[in-house]
Length: 155
Image 1 (spheres, rainbow, N blue to C red):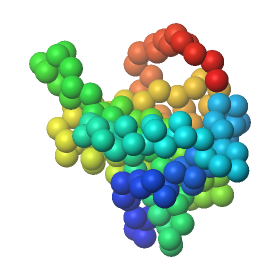
Image 2: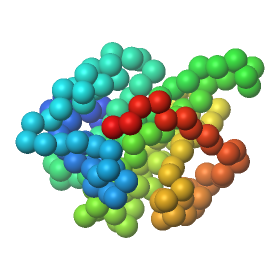
Image 3: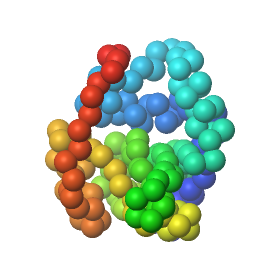
Image 4: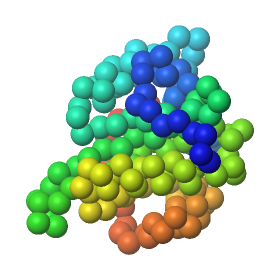
């Protein structure tokens, strides 16, 4: 889609971003967007914006936010001091899914990671998202590792 605009998120975008995070079964269980946006989102946004290794991006179509994602650039010692990109919180507004926006989002993110000098881009996805897993596989992502998590706090 050639008419998509990719840009860094602003504080004014936060309500729309949180709505996109809420806009699926799993997100609805862990996100919160009452009448007033909880301060925890504002605090997290400010930390992300202040970190040069983080990019919170929104995607506009005809002036409407239709997608969002976060790229984290991780420097590490393996791969001879390599740099990798971690992609998180990938969401396309439900009314725009299936229109090629997600593929454009990933093309953009892969391009950004390449520009930054990353040797790979990675993501995790919940095993309860089979459609997302099929989509990521169609983009060339491979389930090469077994991910493990330890929950430290419940929300």
